Length: 109
Image 1 (cartoon, rainbow, N blue to C red):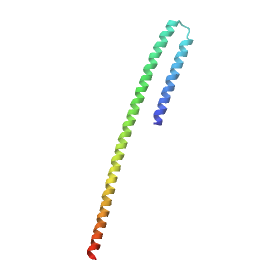
Image 2: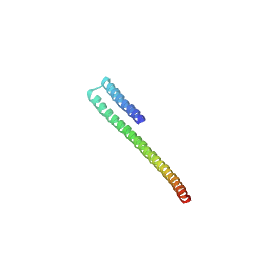
Image 3: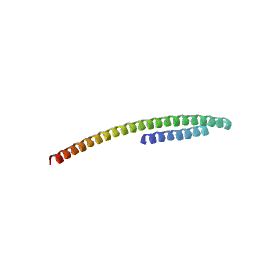
Image 4: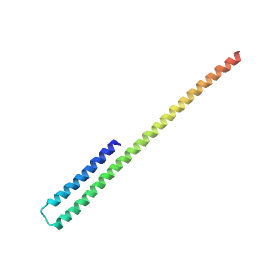
């Protein structure tokens, strides 16, 4: 999760920095207002597309990490279940041996 937070922080920083740079550049450019508004609109579209692409990539990474985590959890659960079954079988063996020993003790007395 920490990795995802870092990725989101970087993406947010890039988006804010890009917007600030684009707006500053356009406002300080020596050109007409109409041309500046057109450039602002074009840069806004570019930044929107870039942000959408970054968000899609991040979501894909999060989904992939989630699937890996689910698979890992499933394997661990199967492993633990197998260990539990082995322990139960082992304990049943001990109980059976104890019952046989008790039965022999009763028969011999």
